[in-house]
Amino acid sequence: MDGGDLEQTVAALRAELRERAASEAALRGQLTEARAELEGRDAAHGQLEAMQQELRGELEELRGLLGQLAEAEAARERLTAERDLLAVEVALLREELAASRVSSEAARAEAAGLRAELERLGAELGQARTEAISGDAGLSEARSLLAEARAARQKLVGAGAAGGEPPAVGG
Image 1 (cartoon, one colour):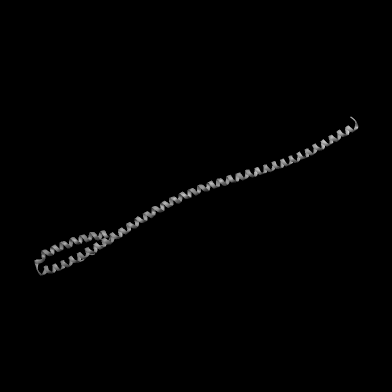
Image 2: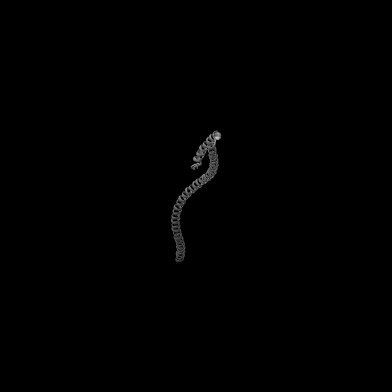
């Protein structure tokens, strides 16, 4: 090899070396970029895992709240059913009260009628006594009226006790 060939070979080797150095520099740049990207992905993966953990916690919290909501809904339904039953019971008690008022008023009216009858019989008895004093002719009629008055009084005593009022006894 002569000196010219050697220089060409050295020049060629230097050119190849420069090419390889440029190629290596490019590869090192790519490697640095890949490492940076990998580190970025690792950081993003770590953030993603942290976010997933946080979301799992929130999901558990939401499940707990849903359980509480279901319990509250069940309690509301029980209270609504209880309120409806109480409303029915109140309506029945109102009907019962109205019926008892009607029967109480009827008993009072009957007692008043019996008192009036008793007063009439008492008046008739008084008249019969007066007539009996003046003559014995009406004695049997007076006894009959007295028996009627006693029977009416017994009826009035029974009705007065049932109506809750003491009987007013006349004559």
